[in-house]
View 1 (cartoon, one colour):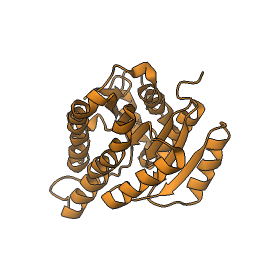
View 2 (cartoon, one colour; view 1 turned 120 degrees about the horizontal axis):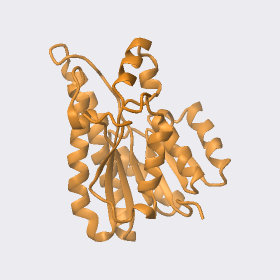
View 3 (cartoon, helix red, strand yellow; view 1 turned 60 degrees about the vertical axis):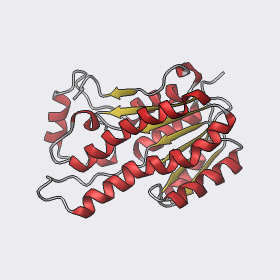
Length: 248
């Protein structure tokens, strides 16, 4: 039996990067997968077809995770289409990196709204289904920057640190109903976000990592599968790093 067979998952920011890797890892593990991104585009359509190759159900949705109204509608649509929501991955996120002295109010607000408020929106919208069925796993995508900070990323670090505190609080609120909430804190992961960095910068990052390489989206996705499965049934309120030993 596959680790997630029979489960239904919802992944935000699921059409690209780490989100896409999670979607495909869930499908390979036997889960039916709904995923959302800001727009339902060709990338989403292509991912739907990739999901179906695993013999499971897959459906993409265009939805703004930073909007509570759209998040509530997304949760209702997924619950109706799939019958339940057993796993939620709050993965939607952006960066707007710059030093605080140059950071605009808009750059601060955008990152907090999309990274942190989206976790509130989707968790609030999905938890009622999980509480009613008395089981579920919520997984929040934080970052090691949320644990140790990083120059030029005050907005991003604040949003990811907020997700960690949010995770620990929600775990205490919903644990009695057998619903778990954990956070993953990736380190330096090779994605579309990091692809544009100069080679010397990427090499410099790799040298700081004990495993001497950047992580892959699949490295993060593998942990997500574990946290969504019954193998992690007694794990909640935790923050687990995927960083090759590069703890902040």
